[in-house]
Structure formats: C-alpha cells, structure tokens
Image 1 (tube, helix red, strand yellow):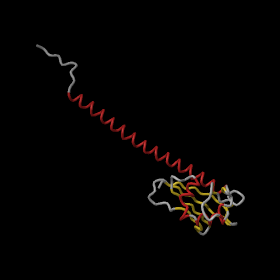
Image 2: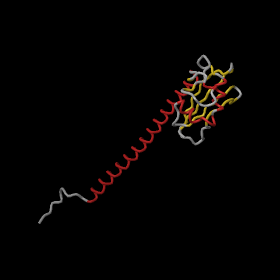
Image 3: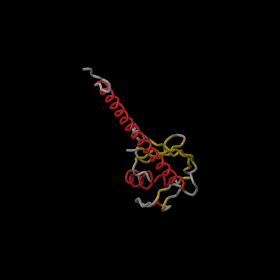
Image 4: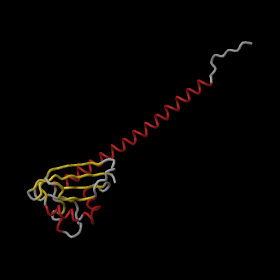
Length: 168
C-alpha cells in the first residue's frame, strides 16, 4: 500500500505560524499602549497650555471682577485681573495682594484663573531678578511644565511675567 503525504500539516509549520501570530499580537499590543500613553501626554500638555494661556490673558489684560478686588480683606473675586487701566500695565497694589494671598487662597486663585486641575507658579521679574512670586515652585522632576512669558509694566518699571503650569 502506498501512502500519499500531500496535504498533511507538519507540526513545525504549525509551530512557526503560531509563533509568528503571537509575535505580531504582542508587538501590536505594545505599540498600542505606547501610542495611547503618548497621546495622553500630548492631550495633557495641550490642556495645560490652553489653561495657562487663558489664565495669563485674564491676568494681564483685565482688571478683574470686581475691579477693586484687592481692597477686600478676603477672597471675594469672580475673575482675577491685575490691569490698572490699559492692557499690560499692571497695578502694583493688585500684584502685592495676589502675593499676600498666596498662603491662604492659593486654591481659590487657581480656580479663579481656570487652572484648578494643575499647580502653578507666577513670577514677576525685572532686570535684577524676581521681585514678586505667587504659587508653588515647579518641581524639577515634573514631566511636563508649560511656561508662558509676557512683558508688562508695573509702576513704570518693565517686568517679565512668567507663568509655569504643571500636573501636580
């Protein structure tokens, strides 16, 4: 009797096919996780940039609501703004009050600025260095820190206003 071996599956063929399938499956899952994590970081950074830009614009182009919020002994502010008449010309008394409220109203101020989900630090620097600071210093191990810089005037002096926002 003569046996025909055509059409039979060898065990090596099956083993190689399963190995290739498992390799492709594992590589696909690994790449999926990598790109998903990368996408989350990109979305987080975009959200932080949006929040930081809006907060900075609100601070340096509006006087706040109410406009004389800095005379109140407690934080009774609908929106926070540091302008004293014209855009980019800040009121020194408002900046002083903001710095004074740092320890007691940090969370409320962050919420008023629209950065409640993140931590922030706001500094006012002249040619010699930092004069005013508000918030928490950004940690050196923060993954993504968004930094926004603008030039303003406070009491006829030129200052660079720097806002740093990060996911705490």
